[in-house]
Image (cartoon, rainbow over all chains, first blue to last red; front, side, top):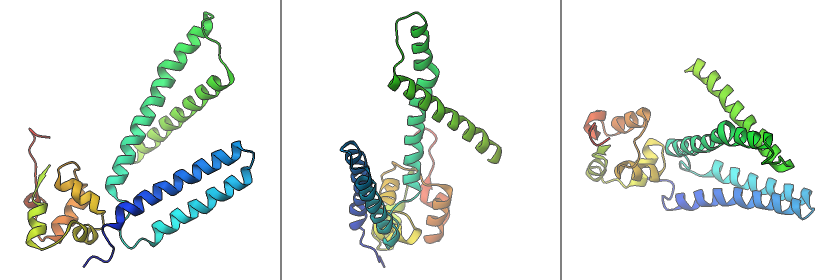
Length: 132
Length: 67
């Protein structure tokens, strides 16, 4: 009755995550070590391996529960970004105004990226609210 | 949410993997539903009811106090 081996499911899921993680680490690490093309190549090979493994798995590897987990994780992540956009960065700006904080390259980039992502979340929410 | 999936599976001599494959989800999802750690979508609840030829209420038992 069961065509796919149920015991292979957790292993395949772990392999899926492992391939993406190793690929990302290879991309970042080899780029830092001044081998960006090799890093991108390793990442591409591992990404293709992960997608091929998923496509060829005879059963269901990811389902609605995984989608729910991702929704919850995304919610927590955007919540942190929202707090940064609404509280932390304005507070740092106020501190900058009274000379207690100096914006550096990394903190400025972080602030703009966090604010940009939260703005994207806001626009996506508005668009989805019109469709649901 | 309380449910009778383990009983229904046993009555049909099925493993969690068998049921998962029959309704198109992972074995972990069936396991989580049986342990009352995950509430299935309405679509999956219907799939399970269709599979066991019963109603959703015959599988899942809603208790507002415990939710």
